[in-house]
Image (cartoon, rainbow, N blue to C red; front, side):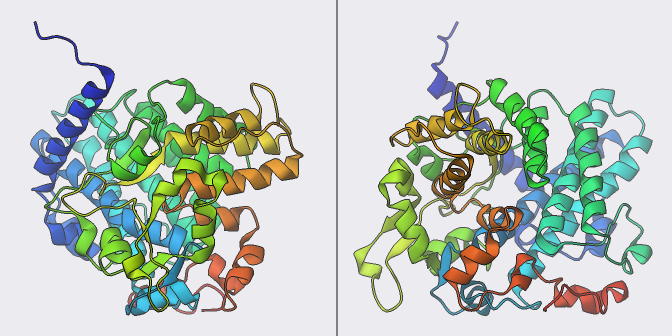
Length: 464
């Protein structure tokens, strides 16, 4: 019998196994489809779900659609806010860097298209899978749970990015070409229904962080309730993920920057050399490293190299050879190229659960002690090799949590959403850019969608 592998070796083996699975799955889906989603009409026409053998192929399409959402989500969350400054020639990134965003922006359109691609594939599965005979009951429940989670996640992102969006619940192409916007609150209630259904039937454990499990849904619910200011529920679901012991914080923060499928990853979208988005118009490595269309803003650089950031300064790196003109020489390191081991995009990880729980506890007035906000903050500060916080008022601790989210989660797609949900966007962003306007608390409905969908005409977000 072979000797048992130590924990880290076993983890590395699982990561290699996961990448092998992803490579096998991705070969069934073209690179162009992942990076530049085809029109939904064509996509739905190509799907087939008539017999048990079709289930895995359609499931692959569902996860592929989630990969298409990932990079535009990071762009929305961090490029809209105060983390970047424009350094290149692309109009899309000039608009985001100078805070003069238009409805014709390509990133705005890319996220919308990828979001609805995910929704359509999920709807297809939800409609068809219950009618396919011969599918194992466990498989049916799991794939339906994955579809409900993906649809709920897409609508959660859509509601917090665009506000009211069309509520598409089926694959009737004729009807879906003419659907108006549903109020944000109703979209979020629908997303919650999907999350709750997914939680019931998702597997207790997944093969790796590339797949949906109950803890993935719990992590999404923790974020959902944080955004809703339902502090008790946010604390509850974050605690369930933390207490599951399924994830452990990496001892060295730099591992978060340089490696895929770390021990604290709850859900991340995986890429291989065959479908890596690094060279696409919206590929993070291409934008941040290759072309350097945007670079870390001076403000975020100051934050990340401060003593309070500790080892989390490894998120960015400095090269004096790039220090010229308006280029400050700093580069984001979190997204590598196709042949590096850090080109995945993390959607949920354990550190965020500690930050969610800390914020919820602070809002509930539980500041110190073993079950207080400071204890959760200090777990992350200890990992970062910075001094623990020992006291503070509620306002002081909430400010500390905002700073910790910068240090810990920079360039993982949270900043703009954080500023908007906490009511801090105007104060922070008007100090950052003279061009900031309150309309940028939502992205515009893409102009191409308004031209394509009659029900959207005259129903743009205010100010665009």
